[in-house]
Length: 95
Image (tube, rainbow, N blue to C red; front, side, top):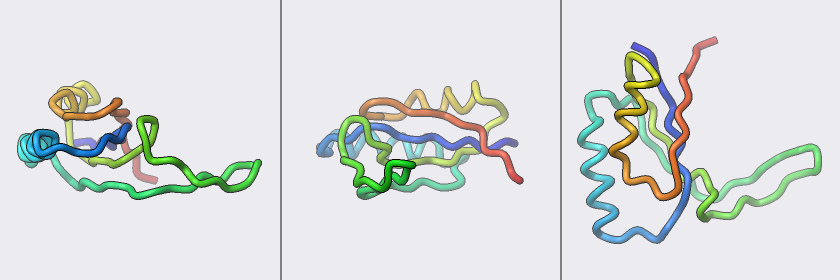
């Protein structure tokens, strides 16, 4: 089985309803879950230097690593997620 990284985008102050929806989604994908995590703050380093990243609608706010047979299956698993702005799905390859 392959591993997929789901990057969660967007932040809003969570409500009890939002937190309940996240809890339901985590439970729904538990059999496929390798790891979940969140981010606080961030910094981007580029050729122009370093800058602090805001925490808002365009921010990467968390990630999930799930096992799935295909990117289509990973997408089906992600579709039940109560994301704020969106989710990006990438296959993880080992080197």
